[in-house]
Amino acid sequence: MVNIGAETHETIRLSPSLKNTLLLINCIVLSIGHCGGPLVTRLYFIHGGKRVWLSSCLLTAGWPFILIIFIATFCFRRATISNYKSKVFNIKPRLFLASAFIGILTGVDDYIYAYGVARLPVSTVALIIASQLAFTAGFAYLLVKQKFSSFSVNAVVLLTIGSGVLALHTSSDRPDGESKREYVLGFVMTLGAAALYGFILPLIELTYQKAKQVIDYQLVMEFQMVMCLFATLFCIVGMLINNDFEL
Image (cartoon, rainbow, N blue to C red; front, side):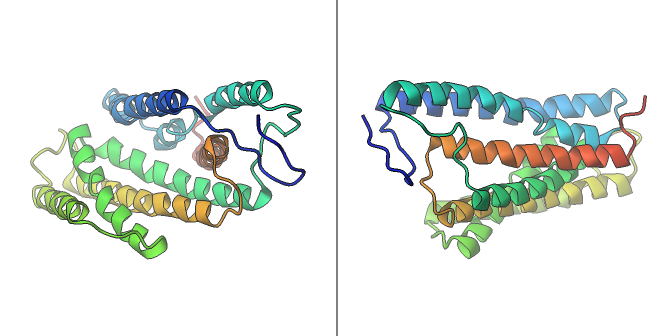
């Protein structure tokens, strides 16, 4: 059992099997979303879809499912910790505001990413998004002083060169009926999405470092839920302005 002080954030020592299970679940969900998301989005645009704000909203609209994790975690804590009196949500206002701000940035990233998917084939989008590693490495070095290794430098250089080569052949995989201007704009927007998300990831790490809270699994999930909530709200506002709710 864990003793809980009046002003301390309680923690639980998870067993290796539980940690591996949580990690496996996260990997599976991430793989499904990362692989299936662009395909479904592109399929929508191929079959006549025009609403980019709607597509961007769907990228983070699944945040309510995190509540299932909260309920399971809360029940686990109540069963494990004696005299458990903590709140369901442990995120403090300081961290909440930071996650809300990052969520708005994520909403912007969702939109420009969806715009790129609307103009480019999925294969091209995947190659451009791969350059995100270079942006992540650069911003990680600037924000959290992440050190480079020979492997990370090699990966960054190869992916950056690959994206550059792709940019030199912008007409080779242009969809039928799409102008070169639209294709190039989609390319630029997708590259911008990779750059912005490359900035968001180190910013999240920096926020954790400045949080002044114990960063455990539940708090990370709370942070993710708030971030996705505000990203979705940002896109909903865009949908309202763009009259996407009208039939």
